[in-house]
Length: 112
Length: 117
Image 1 (cartoon, rainbow over the protein chains, first blue to last red):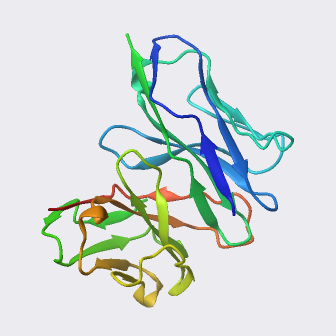
Image 2 (cartoon, one colour):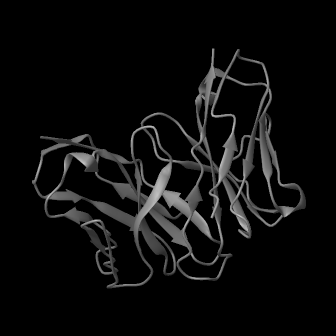
């Protein structure tokens, strides 16, 4: 069945370090791909998305490119801030049935 | 625009008791989801409604969990009787898009945290 696999955490980085969180997916057809973020004590909110191969989603300095050939959607940021400390979830949406499948989440802590 | 509303935010019950969670999606959103998020894990889909019909309830433990979405708007998720392993955050989400439309995102409520003692 359709699924998402993302790198295990937790991840701890110093401020201004480069961030990569790996995400790969298994899906039939052509899903849409998402990154959601959950800040402490808050609900999940959309960070960025891509709807077709080679699309790049971007928001708040974060980027991810939909790579069909490697079935990946890795999240990157060039210079993290303390305020980026959160849990990040990779997700896919089956466009036919509108089902969403989430990865297990990667906890990021950025230290000053 | 008002977001997805959920209540209660927190609930503590003893095992074998019952509990109900309520969700009001964003106005006009046809699709409503209930997810279970156990600490340290990703959200797991329990049930998906489109309008007031069930699209997917394959992972809903139907011997103890039930959900309804009357009139295609708000929804209630019930657990009866609760077990210790039901301790989790129950997330409601809604989506404007229906199946077949590319790209539609999920909007989440803040969740209802259940502790079963």
